[in-house]
Image 1 (cartoon, helix red, strand yellow):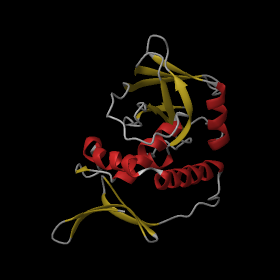
Image 2 (cartoon, one colour):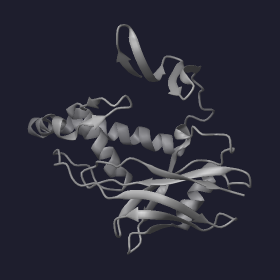
Image 3 (cartoon, one colour):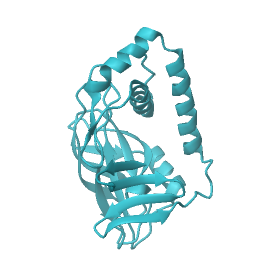
Image 4 (cartoon, helix red, strand yellow):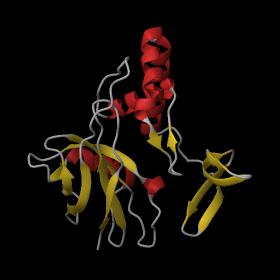
Length: 228
């Protein structure tokens, strides 16, 4: 739950108890938290396992290794949903950077890294066939870099808020000219396993983000694809 304090409270976003606080063009809203019918999916179990491993890894660090993460807190500032600059604690920074490295299959680092350049990442269009067996993401990327590919399920045309529907479907490598990412059969099979094949009349959002060697990640760049 993220709260911004004012004279009482001026803004809020996230989960509190059995409710979700959010806002849209219509203003601030509160709704009952809907529990997933299957909270033990393979992906969820993988995330929990990774979190457990990192929590144990933090406890196993030497004092000097933990101190390196405390010292790095100010070097990895972030901006929250309210536009305020925030700092992660040393432990949360360790978890965050190593979790992102894990997405790319990179090992856990015990010493805090220096901030690094994040590969360029901008999606301009998506190309696909009607059977959804070929998919290419076109945009501006760095040459021959691995990018995380994300997508949503097929949504009705009236849906505009899709942030809660975004899921990782795999990793893709940019082309030798940095202008596209060809989504392979493994990623497409992962999509279909999660969501099924998109049907005519729906739309999906497809995008990418990049992860630097330090574990820093870029914002997600997404674009709408219509099945007509």
